[in-house]
Length: 178
Image 1 (spheres, rainbow, N blue to C red):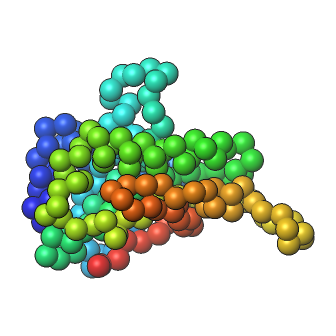
Image 2: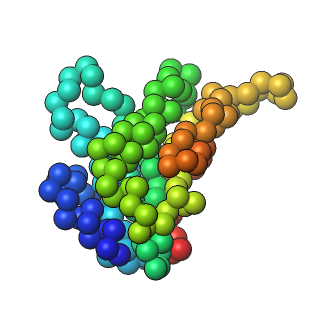
């Protein structure tokens, strides 16, 4: 749990900690069996908005959730919540860019001292979650893919010599004990 304490005590990150990952009626729930002490939620989008970069503010996901499991093993969830009825007007590269910002800048650059610390093990347990309920239906044609299929089929995003795919979840997925 030392990793969680380091994140909680970081002079910058402490301003972006919250108790829930929720936006516009879409959320990530936490099981009652997961102790609040074993979980930290960081509002990554609020962090980037606080930098006052104007038009140069990179797209960022809503939340970064770190869950303590045991013996310095952790699970990390990078979460983008979208309450959209249709993905037709949603730029898919923008959604992918949000995850890239978190992995390639937030975790690999700005807060590298935490996320590249060899004392903590989470490289095999990082989940990129796109949580939405798009009302996009497949047509009768078996060959036609939806925009959601296209998003989930994008190339994996690298982090710490591994690659991660975006996973789709319907609202409101529940974080379970490790």
